[in-house]
Image 1 (spheres, rainbow, N blue to C red):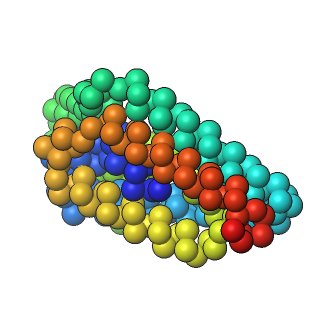
Image 2: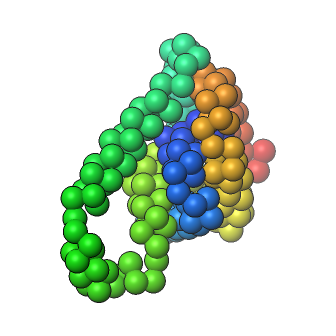
Length: 218
């Protein structure tokens, strides 16, 4: 579920583009750390939910979410014309950010740069600015995403340790592919096929969840 949700996602394209401009190791570390934290937070929320709401209701909400995301993904897949519009959008945003940062850095004198280094924020003394950038772009890009909400729902209805393991492994696989493959790989991905495939998978999970019932037995 996570693989099909993340391939062709905005954060996937962002990782690919960042890896073209900065050291891959730092970009990969920042993105993976962010996605691992996000997955752990999402699973924690899902694990707490049954303690606040009855398991029966959390199961019904999870099943409904699977069907809703499945229908939305299929609708988005049918509307796609095959071109990677999201890749172009993410690239434009990062280009604008990159150029503004470059112009700002050129306008500063060497003396101001040295002074800034001495007065760096506490966090930047231990983490590279590139790591922080990759982490923040990925974290806020994933917040409220379909994969995050689906992870919360899945953790509320299934074993949270299994959800964490599956989610982190899938995120690592997708992010590593994006960082290593770069734009050349990202441009080959058909958002239409990804949307249709993820839609079918979400609907399949919804049917399985509906048939299994709150007790988790088919």
